[in-house]
Length: 260
Length: 265
Image (tube, rainbow over all chains, first blue to last red; front, side, top):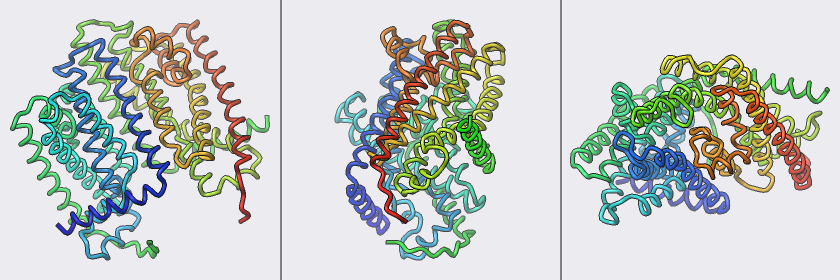
């Protein structure tokens, strides 16, 4: 509960800071919204020629975008440092978070917001409202799925970033791991051959932040939701365990900085 | 000749900077492997479902090799606008005024120098991955030579547009959203993901008049379906757009200099 309060206060503070440069904030949000929308042009053209590909149609792929973009946008908007964990560890910046009486992982993640993430979140929500069938009855399920997707992205970001405890300069590797999960998540998992599919349910859990929640929203099955919940809890527990295990190896950079 | 020699020198330094961070540089190959893996899976599905050997004149092998070539150009782009924005915000742009090469020319040369080693790495990686995946039999030697020529002009055009976006930092706090839109125009009407032959007629007609397809579609098309007449037409289009964007950069830089206030230091 204490960590939730911290995350909430940081979110408010980060949003207020962003509002100090309102023009830049609005430009980033709507720029990202337009950016995401243009990605759908490719799928629209493809499905015009081939209306059904391995059980997926345009609505199915748009639903993948709706849940994946919402979950990704939510997690980087609230945990703006998620993609910088490896950098913070390698540069010795973690000292700041260790010296304060708060959970260092949640504190590190939430102390920054990613402005374009709000654009991704807005894009995902708009797709859900305009395109995804089922109407408002599926709203609670959509919200739950988006939170689960956000937490899986969070687990991947923390696991990838924690590599820096063992490897030192792991920023590029961490970025590739996280970006690969995001890239694969935007394609239906049924397009990929068996071996790759195993990877997409485990090491790069792209299926669980794209196809699986999209299918749960389109044709609800308890098995799909159960799989999502169990995977999310397991991944989050593993990510926390790895981070704190790695923290034992952390060596301070003895850097002296003044923070406002 | 002097400005050209200076630009080559600046480009060489930028290329060496890329190679200095070998780990980061080689990690780019991983991204290329991932994207090619995704495209091979996607297009294999499309051709299996359609049951046709060719779609809009492309076989599966053609389309995958087309994507290697478009991605090679795209992923070699330098994002020079980020450095330019930082230079404008921090005031470091003032130091560049004393250099024997103008700020935009310096940035364009840096951009090309940064792109060169990335281009070689992406092309080698992409070719190896899809060669093993769908076979090496696409394209031809004249097609490869035409690709290299059009790719150089494409990267030059991309560098000029990157510099133009970077110069917007004199008016805008954040130029990244402009880049996102430019990048997605390359993805769509530029033919990065889908050759123009797959477009409906109206969209293909519009796309052929826009500059974006000269950056991604043109070099890739020259490789998979080499035709001297079409290559000459595409190269001419690239040169005309280079002249247009070169003039635009010069005009915008002149306007930007008027906004520049150097506060001593």
